[in-house]
Length: 179
Image (cartoon, rainbow, N blue to C red; front, side, top):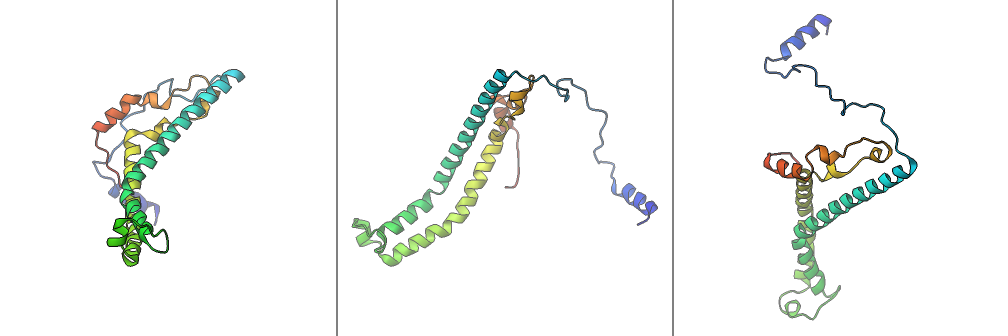
């Protein structure tokens, strides 16, 4: 393609409704990457401890949320596989009433197979539910960078987004994403 054809192609591909930057962004001195003042050694260790504790709490909150969502969504699979293994004669062979009257080895094997088959779609549903909830609650925005411990004047990330009330404000907006 020659330069003339390339220029004609660019001119034809732009539409009148395409977004253009209307002006320069406003300058805010707090947002600039100026050289920041380093903390003293004792202060740096205290802030490092605070950042590590906060990040650990956020991590454990994420793990707790993930475990509870997976436990609730995968409950049907857990129950079906449990009863299949409990009543099969080569595994546990329980003497419970329902194992003697309702479930024999063939039906127990069918329950085990059914449980493992329905597990994969339920894992996808649980993962999508967790990702949606974590995005809506902005859980990953609560992790703080380690630079907070080294330099003075670095703002908390969640504070700039409105703090805890930023999550409530975000619930009112409709966010749609494919997971």
